[in-house]
Image (cartoon, rainbow, N blue to C red; front, side):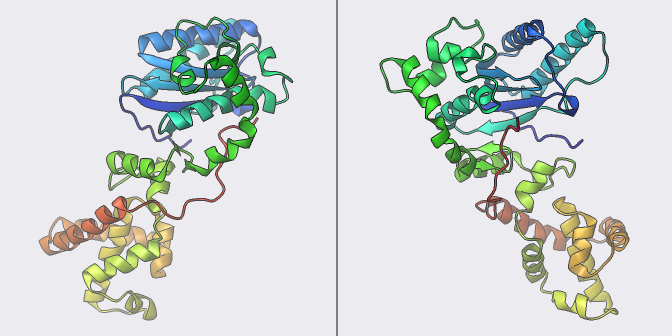
Length: 340
């Protein structure tokens, strides 16, 4: 399974989601749920995490939290492993409990924080488990809406303080009841299945945490950058090298200088990590293995020829400019965070 892209920094807000393996239940009884919340509290204390909201469903859970240290990966790894171990011992089983790695969605600011807390708390209602959310005991909703005593590790003030009302609990109940009318707003600002916020927010995160050579094993990294059409990149790169790409396509036999230009462009596209060999080959009417051979040849030439190094260095400036552009061509239909 492909790795998730983990962006970690002090003061980051996250929506965390994880499901049972093969969508199986992760709770068999209420004791499991109590155990889960106990471990959640221990994680919050040990890793200095502020938990704002939670809901435990049968086969998955949602968390809304803030990390005071850049440690979301370490903390959630400890949490998942600890709960799985305790669950397996109790139920005399072995193996994975959760379906791969947890999903994390980075949240921009307070505006989205309160909307997500409403979304999380409405899960039992959407799943048809209850008619009234107050009747569902395995979420933080009763604390927010009816001032039920919270566990020590639950922070409600950051969310409730956003409500401009004298009676916070009443205002929160009303907001959750009317939330279905606001839900569309969240998905309009949900980018790449990873960011919840404005385009400027995505740009800031992208410029700070996305390198020129993203790890191809992390599809989210690749997706953020590869929104730029490869044909557009090729055309701009060819202009920098002052070569004509039509020459590569119109003749099966090309001269040595044109072949070198072509191979430099192939290597350049490959080195970004944005596109695979098949995608690159389609641009040059070459097969997958041919692209692989051209890349191998260029690697050898780069170790010996400084002129080629300089030409590739000139293309690096193109990558830098592209990485600073406003994100474009985003998917119009955004995938929802939860499928009950």
